[in-house]
Length: 311
Ligand code: TXA
Ligand code: MG
Picture 1: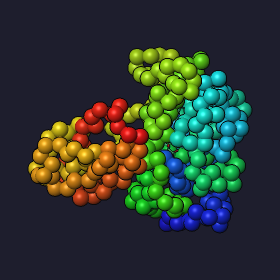
Picture 2: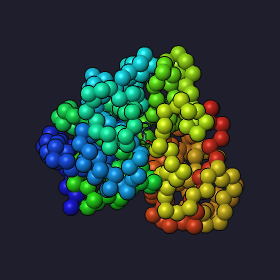
Picture 3: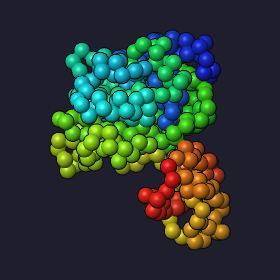
Picture 4: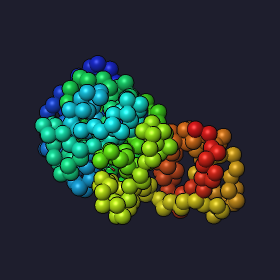
């Protein structure tokens, strides 16, 4: 049975009790819903891996209430400090070397010498982290490889019965995961693109951001999370579709529909005006919606001229 908790003081107190007992609590963040567990206890991290069906070589992000708590877990160089100053609390994860004496369990870090740290801005996440007082490991609250959840109902669709509780609040505002930046040896690496752009990061640190390709750059921090299949609906998905085939479900973007759209079984538009922020917010929930209709294929329109798109 998954307990459904309200996003108020009582719900947060109950969530803390469950976390303290080593249990799993899903909670809202501004990016997507996270599946939280006490990051300092290996057996709690083990439960996350089991509930998600996630390979345990894929490390978890530790969530903290503030910058001070984060600096107790990792070593920040000047880039990391600048980025934390500028983007925290908010949708940025920093991967930095582990500080000796840090409390995040080795299993939560998947045995790496680095740790992923994030200070979320969502008021419910903030309240939970403050009340719990310890780092909370939280991957996105979906089964491994599936679409990330931006609403409480998405979490329950994947994990009802498999987790102890969920704090139910509204839809996540950003709708895409945090941008992950690795800071090591005075360099900054983009480990996962997200809502905060590479250009915005480069501007804050005053230096280019290296796009990490672990296969070609032995000095780049490892990012085991970039598995071949990610965020996958059950229906086949066709990307960069320029021509829609009869019966396909079309996930459109912007005012111009691709050729053949009139033969689609359904058209859902991420943002009819071509607003990228609105599209990000809608992406996962629209994918889930179309997937439920079990179309032959979900065709996604080619995102052209991204540079000219509104944010
Ligand atoms: O927005 C988000 O970041 C959400 C919310 C819940 O905060 N969380 C999230 O977690 O997306 P998850 O587990 O779905 O993705 C975490 C990513 C994985 O790709 C993992 O490999 C990477 O972070 N990661 C975590 N620690 C790392 C480390 N020490 N080195 C390299 N990559 C790391
Ligand atoms: Mg995920």
